[in-house]
Image (cartoon, rainbow, N blue to C red; front, side, top):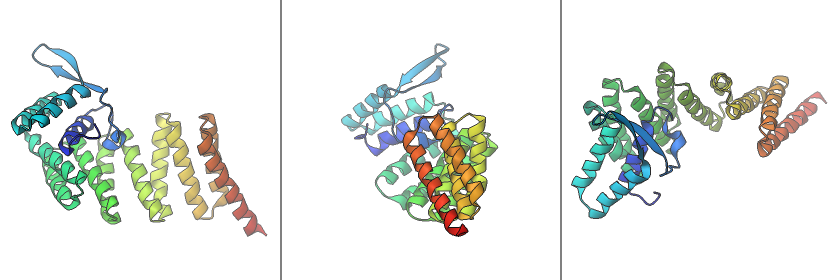
Length: 269
């Protein structure tokens, strides 16, 4: 799979991006060919399962033959299985080409095509695809050091996810926004996003994400020199990590608490 062409990788990525049960693409940096998805076959009125390994095999066969016509046919099969509406197919094609450019390092060309796809997805209110493209644009801008544009894309993606009440994807995008603000040392701007992340984590009993949120909250209050609040947040994170038996993460938080206590003792001298 890792040796597949950019077009092949793009096709598989499109499959994952359109599975309602999985959220946005952040979870799929590693794609397992043994995974499968279901689609409704209108010919026999049954739900059928497609394994990615079978799709990969078909597309690889097309590529080996070097026949663009066959590859186009496989695309149509996949688009049909994903129930891609005809009006969105041009946007999907743009995304495939953009993904190819992205892999090749042609970021300006990729951004141009993603933005064209964005216009189509906006026109037809294809919110899921809209969020995916906005996230991808944010990733590219962040990679290229264009922080303001990255945040703008991520926040637009966040708005779409919140509007669609897709809280799982909301949490993922929030972590990206928090990461950018942390890189820029704009700690106070992290706080509302961290509390929203914590709210989602508590709702879905996501202990790992809750601990990350509490650690981030502790970092912000430590920066603001509100040490007692920072320590309280760290201790909650530590308790969660210990409950999860996440030893290494617990040790990192313990180290942070010790450093915080040292800072506090220096101030009180």
